[in-house]
Image (tube, rainbow, N blue to C red; front, side, top):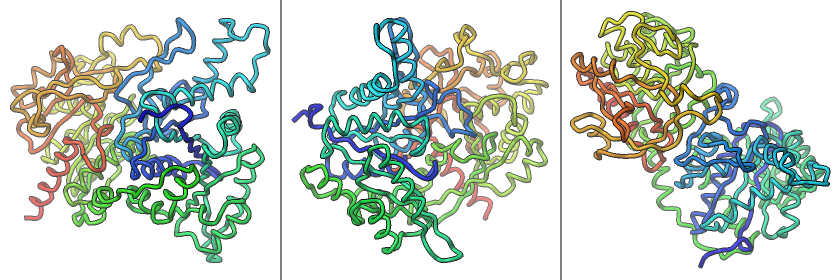
Length: 558
């Protein structure tokens, strides 16, 4: 039976006290609770910043930019178009937990909302009226939420995570829109989940609930009463702390859910299930209670818990001071590690300070593999080039992602081909050997936002290559995010020295992957395979790297 807009239930997830406490993982875990029971879901993330999308944000400030399969054309009014494939990193968490591909329209930003309203005003959409936050901005927010709720197939439950923290000025219109929507559809179709920090004071051995109380009071002052409070803390919440939160936040005690620090994030849905959150949500909505199917998820989590071997993967890069800059890569390594019975320890190497061969040789002396990270710009580049050169020289398993693949080719050009000064024109526009250059179509682009080669594109894998042995197919689709690419007239000259092209695009014009034939495992790819890795379905490239790393470690031990 196909549902209608009148059947959709809404779960709104807000955050309190401070940002970065795991609203994304909480939202994804709640979605999984419904999936365990056979209900269909869709997730929307609201980001209050004024950017149209996060594509131009600094990874050190915001974390990675997640790339979707599809490109969506955001059209606020006729004749204005903004292609969007770059969205918030939380969508990577959603995809990994739910197994569903997200659509770029599921990421709503203040920039999109205000652009729609302001350009609409210029086109005459509000003739004779004063354009205001209420009702015009809040109406546009609700329209976008409903657009996702009504999209076929209509989900049983639409989950909406609101970025930032309750009390932020930027989030006020979104919280007001939630209040209005809840009033319009009826509170029995809406569940408000508030994620908050409960600090543990070691000096007195006690959880402090006051920040949570203040946070909920702020929410109540906006006309929103949470139905569930998810309490982030270092340890499992004590019963007295739960009782206090329930009393002062006007929430049933059974709806105060503990969310302590855990080593394996994929255990979180099971933790929520053990505390009765899934059953409580179904009861809240008056939905049919169904027996949750947990076996497959438990088996998957057990692989992470039972991994006995430890391997170390070095990640040289320029955004290493914030691990969320490489969130999907970190998770893809963990997925592959669990599948191989290994825990992956990441060694971060900041290549702005660790930038010469001697330093990198020392850094990579005892690692089992190297993943050269994606990025942009000149900072830290020489260190990344040295890392690629040392991995080749020392026969360390190597995977270069996007910029990492490009700089791996630059290292080969300099060290093996003898092309002194070989570089990417992104860093050295006057290089005598521009091994990496701007794509032809990118030379016409004037705007920076949403103009890269983005989204999923066909990858044609060449036979008799390491890449083909990993994938087992000659054609696949991968997600891309780049302006610069490897230049064929230089790369093809490297073949005799051992570097070959292993994948191209549909036209054969764009090089999508390279590899070394005289190395145990040295592959560079222009795409981002980490975006398609799942906890129960590791990506073949990451599996290949981890298997090679285990073999390398075993070989060193002999």
